[in-house]
Image 1 (cartoon, helix red, strand yellow):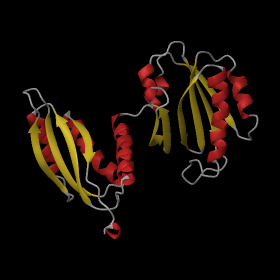
Image 2 (cartoon, rainbow, N blue to C red):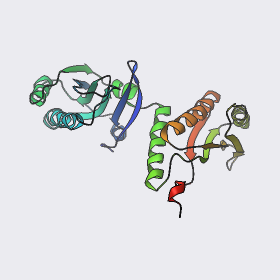
Image 3 (cartoon, rainbow, N blue to C red):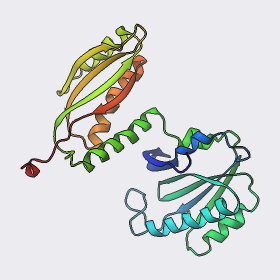
Image 4 (cartoon, rainbow, N blue to C red):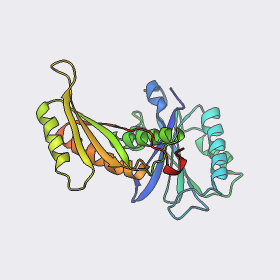
Length: 256
C-alpha cells in the first residue's frame, strides 16, 4: 500500500545518513512507464554537527518538499519514493514517466527559496536506486523493527534504561546448525548471555529454534548492538535471527 513510509540510519559516502522511503509501494511494483529517476539534492543552510537537518531548518525543508511534490507528482504524474539526509544535504527522490518538464517544475518549486540545489535524472526501468540504495537490507529491516518495538514498549510505560531479561530467537534448518549457534553464544566472553532452549517445531521438516536470553537494557543502541551480534552469528551459519521480546519494566521511582 503506497504511502507507508519508514526510515533507518546507515553510512552513505563515508558519513551517517537517514534514509526515509515509501516501503508500502513495493506491493504495487512494477509500475508501468515510471522509468525515470529524478533526484533533487538540496544543500542545507543550517545543518547540525552531524550534517543533519536542524530543528530550525526542518519547516523550510518540509515546505520545499511540498513544492517539489506539487510539481513532480501532482503536475507531472510522478511518485515520491525517498528522502535521504546526511552530509549537509537532503535528497528528494522521485520516479516519473518522463523527464519532460522536470527542470521547469523544479525551478518553479525552488524559486521561493534561497537554497542551492542540483537535479539528477537517469532512466531506471528496474528501479535500481530504490531497490539497491533506498530499500533496507535484512539487517537494516531489523533495526527498523527494533525501533518500532522500543517505541511500543515506551508508549506503554517501559523504562528502557532498566536491565532485564530479553528473549531472542533464531531459526535453523538443521539441529546441527542450531547447536553450532548455541555453542557460539555460550562461548562469548561477555556476561549476560544464556542459551535457554533448543527445540524443533511440530513436524519433521520444521525449523530448529534457539532461544537465547540476555540481561540488558532496551534502549535502541543496546538493542541494536545485542541483536546485531546474534543476527550476524545466525547469518554465517545459514540461519535467521527472528527478533526479540521482553516484559515491561517500569522505573523504580514510578513503582507504587
